[in-house]
Structure formats: structure tokens, C-alpha cells
Amino acid sequence: MSILKLKEFRNKAKMSQRDVASAMNITQSYYWYWEKEIHFPNAKQLKQLCEILDCTPNELLNVKEKYQAAMNKLDV
Image (cartoon, one colour):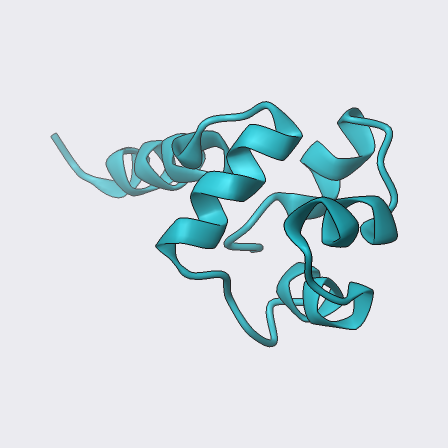
């Protein structure tokens, strides 16, 4: 399961990897590492990504789905 939903939100915003990288003033290959989860953006970069991709940190980090999956495993 992916940690970041970068590709999903990038596609929703109709942006290429190059577009996002350019908006962040980084190289496209640097961004590609994030999408492939080889490296991860820091907090400041995550905030910038959310502004560019018009999403919240929780959405980008897939927090709700992970939380729900963990809650479903509990025997309550």
C-alpha cells in the first residue's frame, strides 16, 4: 500500500511530474523519487505539495484509509 497519493492527486490536477517539480523548484527526477517512494518530502515540501495539488496533508498521506483499515482489524 502506498504511503503517499502523489500520482493520484497529480493526475487529478492534470499536471505532469515536470509541472509539479517546476512549481516546487526541484528537478523532475527528484519528484519522481517521491512518487516511487524511494525518498520522501519533508514537512515544508509536503505543505507545498498540498497547496499545488489542492489537497490536505491527511489526503496526501492517505491517513483516513490507513486509520480505517487499522480500526477494522480491532475486535471491538
